[in-house]
Image (cartoon, rainbow, N blue to C red; front, top):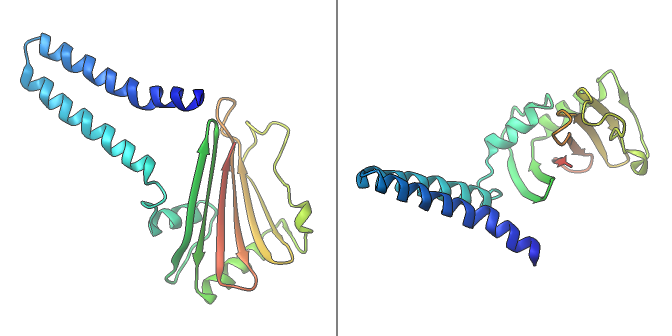
Amino acid sequence: MLLFILLFLFFVIIPVGIGIVIYKLIVRSGSKRNATIFAVIYGLILTVTAVSIIFEDELFTKGDALELLREQRIELADGFSIVENQSMSGIGDYYHTFTLQISEKDKFKIIEGIKQAHNFIPFVDSAATDFYPTEDRYEEKRTEYNYETEYQYIREYFQGNGQSYAPTHRKIKVQKKTNEIVFEEMVE
């Protein structure tokens, strides 16, 4: 309960309070018109920010999905649909996953790209697929793993973002039995 109160203070009360203080300072300087303009613009910025945070999953588009796939050198030539999209965040952690229904042609193109990677590992035990680096994880250069499990072909990507920032860890899983791909991003 204390955490909720602190988060509410930080994300609601403080920004609104700052806006009120600035508004009153502008009014005291003798420009009520400028204070009103500031209040409208500041209110819109807070509203848009709140809506984009609250409805993040609903505002996720096909363009967003394509951009995340391109970062891992995966291109879709045919149409696709978003089957599911979810994101969760906590203090210092972020998890995002989505599932796409893709064409058979795109599926085989992605699988071939994974299989032809220089570091492809065929038939890895699903329980032994923890490639997440533990040493120097904040400074780690871009690392990519391509492997096959019993049910999926996987391209896993890891990159440290510097000492003060959480590393990026992403996986794209191509299902063997369906034309679905699953994208997972973990920032810890």
